[in-house]
Image (tube, rainbow, N blue to C red):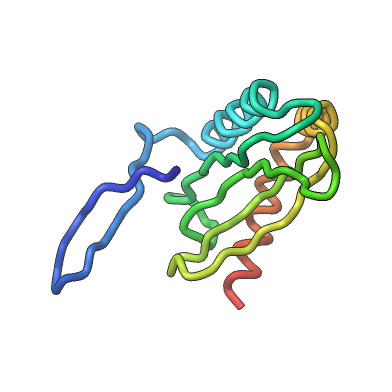
Length: 137
């Protein structure tokens, strides 16, 4: 989840700003989130059976992306037992809507192979940019 701290309270409106983790550059934040998702897939996604959906958030503050935050999500595939969906979602700055795309689906091994290939990080960055641009319209 994105961590928020209350910045100002005016006229009964609460303005929230995400906490920046000690000025970490955006590429390092992406690496950290990808690493956490990869670890969680290894631990939490079984070969067969039920698992809880989970996500890791990426703050988009301090960048040229259009959006409040992005998240990489792993969800169960309801139609095929043992399969999962790897999704990427970007939240509109007004926090009223979001845009998302499925990156891949398959077994735990399929998801990990997809994430371990060269160019995955750049694909995530490009997709975040594209989803943010789609939210402008």
